[in-house]
Length: 74
Image (cartoon, rainbow, N blue to C red):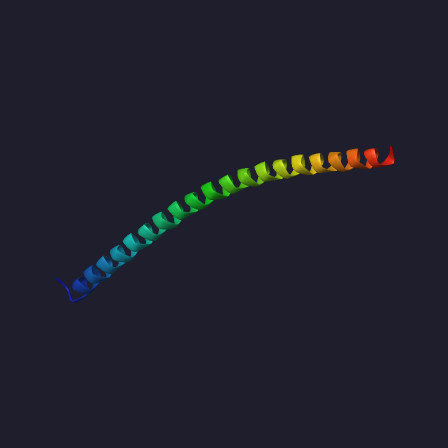
């Protein structure tokens, strides 16, 4: 065994530890990304639904205003 072998073994263990930490971090970020994409999809669907409801409400209000104007003119 040379003088460098224990040092290299220690370096290798340190590298393995850092690699394990990096893999854990990658998994965590990947899971967070999947969660955020899912939430974004939900929000996009909710936004579309709310826009549709807003459009329907606007059309109803405009129709009521038109009927009121027509009643006022007759």
